[in-house]
Length: 221
Image 1 (cartoon, helix red, strand yellow):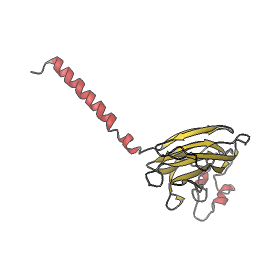
Image 2 (cartoon, helix red, strand yellow):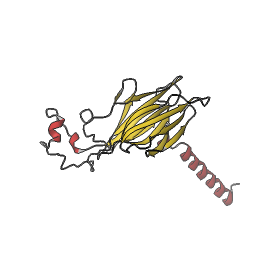
Image 3 (cartoon, rainbow, N blue to C red):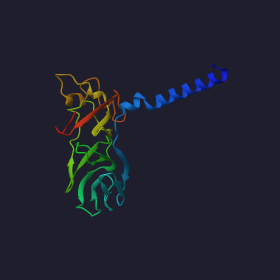
Image 4 (cartoon, helix red, strand yellow):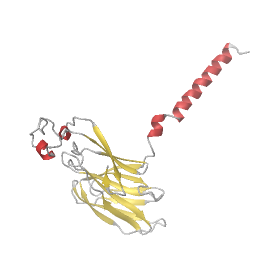
């Protein structure tokens, strides 16, 4: 016979199971994808940072004496047997903001993505991909976005790596209201109702957009 106290215990148990089910099968979590490992850097000249993953052992360094907004960045990998490999010295236009470790080319080995941000008001990003090979890392500067290809883009992007894919989210500005017979340059000059003066760089006006980098095609989509 089900007593009042047993009913309370049963109800409490059902509530607990429901809560666990929500936690374990949260659809929002399921849609999030597998996120790469993010290292937030903000390295100043003369500083370095060790990055470790299952496949990579890399030290990043910004040489002392360089400016924060322009210069170089040094990538010093080590092999699995801890032997130093050839250092890569890469151009740097902006501060070294972050690094991602993830398998980006589908070979089941972690690659390295470096993110720098320019010092100008647009805060434009530059992404350098370093792919892992048996003989070391191979660097490739990914193409940047442009307002002609992505109307409304003026920098201020944010990078994320999900399921081995590089994604870039950025705010949209009013100058993306391009019409078929008017080039973007005409809009920027203020000959349409939306002008740079009406829509300054610090105030995006029309939501956000997220694009993905197609590694095989070498372009943003």
